[in-house]
Amino acid sequence: MTPWRRADASCIVMGMKFTLSWLKEYLETNATLNDVSAKLTAIGLEVEGIEDKAAQLKGFVVGHVLSAEKHPDADKLQCLVVDTGKEKLKVVCGAPNARAGLKGVFAPAGSYIPGLNVTLKKTSIRGQESNGMMCSARELVLGEDHAGIIELAGDAVAGSLAADALGVNDPVIEINLTPNRGDCAGIYGVARDLAAAGLGRLKALDVPAVKGAFKNPVSVTLKDSGCPLFLGRYIRGCKVGASPVWLQKRLKSVGLNPVSAPVDVTNYMTLAFNRPLHVFDAAKIKGGIHVRFARGGETLEALNGKTYSLDAGMIAVCDDAGVLGLGGVIGGAPSSVTEMTTDI
Image (tube, rainbow, N blue to C red):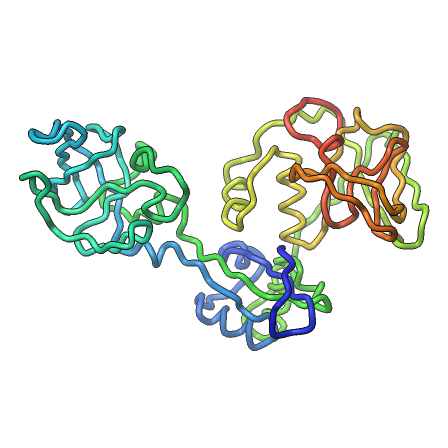
């Protein structure tokens, strides 16, 4: 979630993003995107915006380059023959990675290219017929890459929807939350509120208990009343690597960059269930963990690469050497798990 202040209000409003499919993982409903949006606003969870890339890419399909030959009158251009699933079209392309066999995103004549702010027309380029274009990520506002056209997986089917092949067929909803709606600061809470409003049925969570097999060697002390409860789990033999593709896609869909499996899991749990988590490298913790009020002037080197000066009264998660993170806000870089293999 991203905190921000509305100019026309005196309260702090939190912006929260989630995808429609992620919401429906917890909410059994046949409601459409418009139905969900209307009900959210009706129950006080105002919809700030909806990003539907599939709608923006309507008409864009997977194009299979059958042949690529040098343009007879331009050194940096190629003349392609592209299979669009329905027909084979001639396309002039200047991308250096254009080649026979490549599958990419094809925009037919009549398509609006958002990154260029132009609508394509059938045309002639240096005397060669061109019936659309093969697109780069920047041209589709899907990233900054403009060095070449998008390369899709080899099993992408010519003529199928580009949004499906790109994995951007899931609308992203952003809602506003005021501080009194902490119950909806996680996606499961939003699903619960919609179910209570009659939009569907809240799915029960199947969360089996995992019994501990050994004692946690890292002690935890609550030194102030600012944090009444602190829970943690010590995990042995954790090999830190990339998280599964489905998890990476889910985080990317709401604007988060995947880091590693342990870190990504904590971000997932925070977004899904409003349970702010942080994963520590046990080998870097000095002594035990102490949860206390920060002292004015203490600093935190955070995961985002910034160093913060803490105000007295902030809830600080510390070890014997100093501050490890801010409770429920952000973790510190020196103690976090990124790429090492270790016990955590």
